[in-house]
Structure formats: structure tokens, C-alpha cells
Image (cartoon, rainbow, N blue to C red):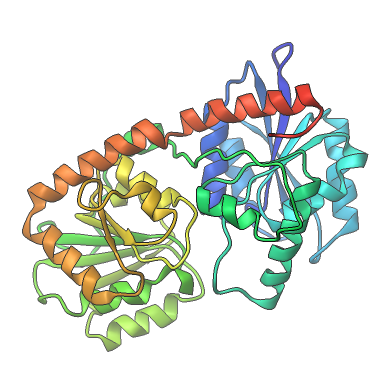
Length: 377
């Protein structure tokens, strides 16, 4: 570690590699090692719990550690995390998510670190436990040294409780454009013709992602000339497969499961679709745009930050399958126009939403937290 650099722990859940986990990986790739020494730490709920984020961080050459913390709240896990931070002389814990935020707060005095929290978004379709976690999460924020939401919508959400006044710093989400550029196009899966117009989705298969809207839109298209690739996994997978079959789309829609080559797969798409009900600034759409893939998304906060309608992509009202079908038809009918829009989207991401820019802003915030003794404002 260079003299004068800060030791920062990126603290997440990290059982799987989805948006928040890939955000952490993008950030640490571009943090200057002369200024910031990085360690990735995750919570391991059970002995056989996957540690995808730790594994990937190690593969990329970063120090990484999993903390055993059984149950919904493990005081032994809090102590283990705090002791690890004290022994490793951690300066700042940068936490991501309900459980890491709470564990980092409870262990802060014992661990002797500054605490910065980054909320990555909250969904509409929440279990009672998730509602409780979200409420506790917002109660944690005023006691952090800094809170750094990823979007204007998340910033407003942090302030939902008027009696809470967390010190905040908006640092807009960014994606690893270098990783996107390096990814080669993937082979198309069986059942998808090389000359087909590919409509695609990448992400979790959960209700708030709105994949039913995509399937309903596809069901109105002519039967020939296109194929849909859905990459990702989640509790909705079997139901979505049954829904596709019921709509007569069993041969037209491929549910591929989790794909490590998501970036290469997106490069084969004529249109990437994100029909979500709720997003921050969605990493997967930034990745698609950075790869010059034409993009369409629900007209919601977060997606609107990326898409300028008709210029860098297309928007449709959330849940409106008819409007989405019109967007798909337009992209199929005029691929040259779609490519022009996609290139404008790529330039927008490169200029405003790169992980390199995001890392420079976090380096400045880390230094500010240490210099001020806490407080990001």
C-alpha cells in the first residue's frame, strides 16, 4: 500500500453477481491504488452460502474476505466484522445494502472506521421482512459519516422520513465501459437463427422487472423474423416459461438462466428491453448502451436518466405492452435508425456514466471523510 493511501472495505452481501455486486467490481477496478487500498468483504449467512463477490474480487487480484454471520442479525457476525476491520486497520467501510449497512453501523465503534453507505435501490414488491429492512436502513443513514445515493430518485428516497437528515452526496452511477469494450460477442443459443432480429433482457427474473410486459408485447408481433433471449435467474423463471408457452411463444423465447457472458450476449441484440417498475440508474442498461446496443425501457426514474427518447433510446409507459410492441416494430423496421440511436446512447454513457468518473468522485469523498472526521456535505 502506498504511503498516505486509505484502506477502504467495500462491504456487500454478494451471494450472487447482480447489479450492486457488479457496481462494486466496477468501482474498485478504477480506484487509484496509490490513493485507495481495497478489500472486499461479504456476509456469509450459512456454511454453504455462495460467495460470488468474494470469489470474483479475488480472481481480479483484490483482497477479499467472507464474514460468517448466521441468521437475520448475528451479533457474533458484527463482532467478527468489527474485529477484522480493526486488525486490518481499515479507515473507511463503504457499505452496500440493508444488512451490510446495519452490521457496519453496529460495529463502527469497535472497528474504529468511518462509515459511508450507498443505497442501490428499493423495490415495490417487498416481503414484510424487506419492508422492515428498508425502514431500518433509512434509520441507519443519519448515523453514517456519509450517504452517497446513485441517482436523484434514490436521493429523494433517502429523505422520505422528514425527521431524518442524513448527510448526503449524490454520486451518479457508472459502469465499467472498459469491460464492455473488451467482451467479444457471444454465440447465439440453439433455436435462435443468425438472421433473426434479437430482442433481449438481462437481469433478475423477479416481478418488479416487468418481464410479463415484454412477453405480452412479443405476442402481438408477426411470428417470423425475430427471437427473444432472456438471460438471468430468479423465482419467476418457471412461471415466465409457462406464460411464454401459454402465449404461443415457447419456440420464440429462450430463457437462458444466468449467463456469465451477459455483455457478449447483449452485443447480439437488436434491441435490449428493460420493462421494470423500479430502478436506480440501471447498470445493465448502461452496459447495453456502452456496447452500442439499441435500448428501450419503462418511462420511470433511473431509466429516464439514461434515455433521451428517440435520441439515445426509447421509453414506453410502464406496463404498456402495446407501446412496447410499437417500439420493437420500429427498431425491426429501421435497423439503421436503431444503430444511430445506439451510438448516441454509447456516447452518452461514455461521457456521463463511466465507472472511471465515478471512482474519481469517490476518491475525493473518501479523502473528505477522513479530513473532516466524518460528514459528506
